[in-house]
Length: 327
Length: 114
Image (tube, rainbow over all chains, first blue to last red; front, side, top):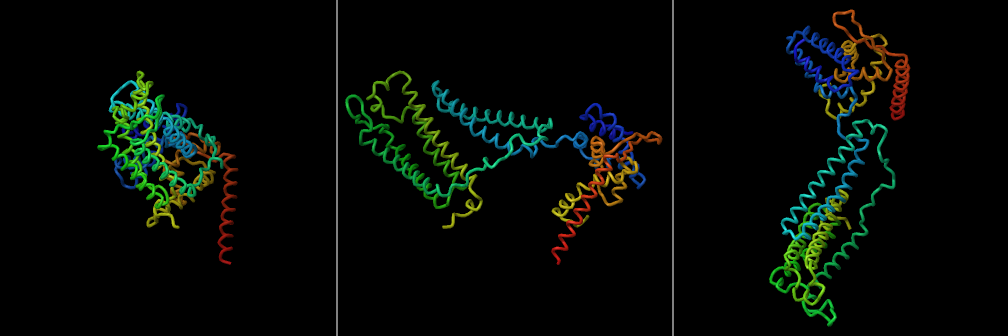
C-alpha cells in the first residue's frame, strides 16, 4: 500500500482511544482498498483512484471525530446561550471595574493623564481577554468531556424573561434628562455670580470654576450641554435609541467628559481662590483626591450614558430601529 | 438530485437522516461488510457517504444493535456486521413508527382533499 493511504489511516486513528485503534485501522484500510479497487475496475489509474477515494473521505480529523463521537464544535447548542449570557455579564461587570480601578490607582499615584488612560485601556483589554479565554475554556471542557450531554447547566425558566422595551418610561426619561441638563446649565452660570458654598466666615464669593475657563472651555461645555438637550429631543422624536443615535450619544458624552477630566487632572478646573477659602482643602493630597475624583465621576457618568445608549439601541425592537414610532 | 435547490436538498436530507439506521439494520439481517453495505444501500436509493456510514456502523455496534466478526478467509480481511436481536427489535419498532407516520401523512392529505 502506498504512503498516501498509510498517512491517511494513521492520521485518522491517531486520536482514537487505544482500544479501538488497531481495529478501526484494519477496517478502514480494507474499506479504502475496496473503494480503490472499484474505481480501478471502472478504468481509473491506481494513483487517481486512491487520491479520489481519500479526498472523498475528507479531513481525517473529521472522520476520527465521527468514530469517537466527539463534537466538531467548541461550545454546542446545549450550553451556548448560558455561555453567551455568562460572558456578557462578566465582561460588563469586571472590565469597567478593573479599568476604573487601575486608572484610579495610577491617578492617585500622580501619573500623567496619558499614563492613566493607557493603564485603563491596557487593564480593560487584558481583563476582557482573560474573561473570554477562561469562560470559553470552562464551557469547551464541559462539551468536550460530554458533561453537556446531560442537559444545560442552567435551565431556562420564565423568571429569566427580560422586561419588555420600556415605551411608557420613554417620555419620563426624556423629561428627566432635560431637567437635569437644564440644572447643569443653571449651575454653570449661577456659580459664576452667586455663592454656592459657605465657610465659617459666611458665603464664599468666589466662582467654583476657574473664571479663566470662560475664554473657551466653559462656553464649550455649555455648547455640549445644549447639544445633549437637542439630542435628547431628537431621540424622543425617533421613538428610542437607534444605532446612529447611540454613536452620536457616545460622541457628545465624551466630548463633555474628557475636557472636564483633563482639566481637573491638570488642576485647571476649579478656581484656586475658591479652594483657598477652605482650610481643609489645603491639606496634603486633598487637591489630588478632588482632581481624580472629579475626573472619575465625569468619565464614569459619560461611560454610563454611552453604554446605556448602546444597550437601548441593541434592545430596541427592529421595527422601532427602522422607523420612528407611529403616533 | 440535480436541479434541486438548496432548501429542498436540506429538507430532503433531514427527512432521510433517520432512515439510514433503519436501512442498515434491515440490510444487515444478512451479514455484510462496510463497502458492500454502502453499495447495496446506494443501489436501494440511500446515498450515504462513506465517512458517515463507517463510523455509524461502529456506533450501532457499540449500542449493541449490530454484532461484528472478522472474516479472514479472503485475501483481504473484512469486518462483517450483522443485526443483533436488540437491533432486530429496534428495526421492528422503527418500521412500525414509519408505517404510523405514513398513515398519519396520508390521513392529513386525504383530510385536506375531502
